[in-house]
Length: 233
Ligand code: AMP
Image (cartoon, rainbow, N blue to C red; front, top):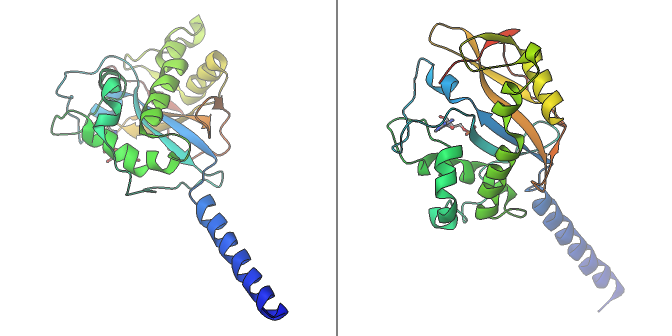
């Protein structure tokens, strides 16, 4: 082969390698958001909610999702349609899923639709690190570890924060969690039927292996009044 052709071939090989690297790293992500939801605020809205067929969820934050994110604020989604949600992969986690990741959508259902949506849209984007079983188990374990309601209710006398319909400052909620657990959470609010701003979801950041909480590399702008309601459930 002539020298010129050899260089040509080498260039093509380098270009192919480069495109493969770009393609594989485009599925990558920088960290996870663990998003926990207050069921009272999902239900006390104009669109209301439906309890799962297993009954009213316990009085606790529920998991909404574990979402891969990039540091620039955007996130990958629906990364792999060839690996759809498969309930058989998490049969051993079903009791915990029903208890910690309750569906509140209508009509009343068993939760498979919600979990399937979360895996297909978010979870599959982390499959190079966590398979389906690991993904759901990781979210369940992180939720137990952070025990948000415990952090709020066990706080010192001044900041004791209860889901009893009272209003609390966003700063005190964030500060209490930071003091109790060591990480600054981000708070998302929605509006109750009367239009009051209420505590809807809490975001915590987790490293890209799903093994430890971290301070959030990027925050999302979330609309909350200075003082927000923490509704009962
Ligand atoms: P995502 O696409 O992951 O941001 O999640 C948003 C979707 O999740 C919307 O369709 C919501 O209606 C749905 N959703 C949020 N919370 C719940 C819940 N507790 N139960 C069932 N669906 C939910």
